[in-house]
Length: 101
Image (cartoon, rainbow, N blue to C red; front, top):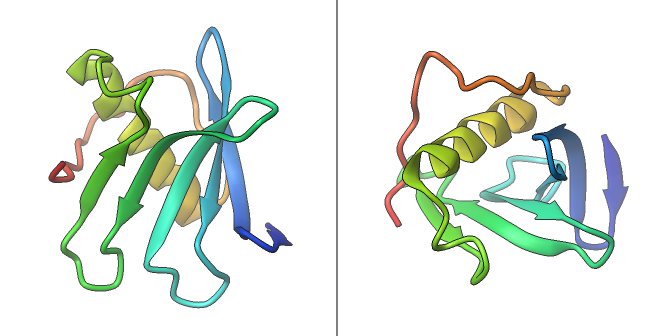
C-alpha cells in the first residue's frame, strides 16, 4: 500500500486494454474507494458506504455505458484488490457483489 494526499493505493488489476488502480479514501476504516486508470487518474468507479454497508457504485462519465457484465467484473475485481491488496486475475469471479447505482 502506498499513501498519497488523495488516499491509499491498495493495488491494481487489469484487462486486455488497461490497468486499473484501487485507491482507498484513507488508511484507517475508509468509507470509500476509487478505481482509476490512465496517466491522468481517470475515475472509472467510486464505491461508497463501506462502513455502513449501504454500498453505492458511481461510475465515471465515460464508463457508464459499458456492458453490465463488464461493470460486475470491475466491481468484483476492485473489491478483491481493496480487501486483499493484491493483483486480481483477469477472469470474472464466481461470486458477485452488487452495488446500487
